[in-house]
Image (cartoon, rainbow, N blue to C red; front, side, top):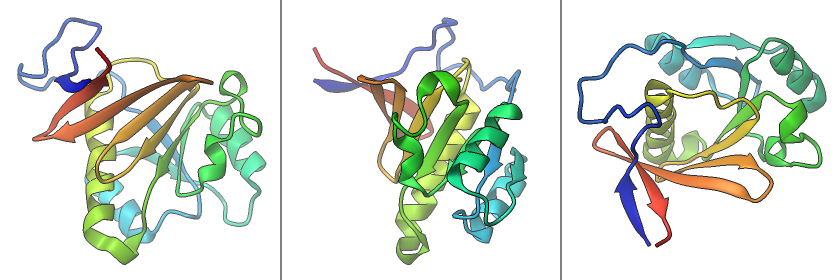
Length: 160
């Protein structure tokens, strides 16, 4: 078991100069995300909208799916396959941590930005957990991939 440099399906290496994204991920931000995170997303020129405060999780999920956007949230309920099945839900990015541990939270946000910059595929239906140390992608019940960002490169956990 080891961390190995992630190779992309299109054959492009992370060692090559970064190419502009063909399609930036679209985000639907719920009310659990702090204004400081919104400011960081604005500076990164992220494509996002902010959901109306006070809506239920289900309403946020329906609206995000209608707009084909990933929900960006701190709410782990969005990882529930019973409540939000992969096949009927556009996807979620659950940001771990809070501003109480500002450094770890900043790392989690940077990991989110790195994931967005390296996105070369279609992740519809995927649920991401983004923390200061790892990104876990849940593709379907029982199917997941763990990623780590180091020196602006993505590494995948591989069981040999």
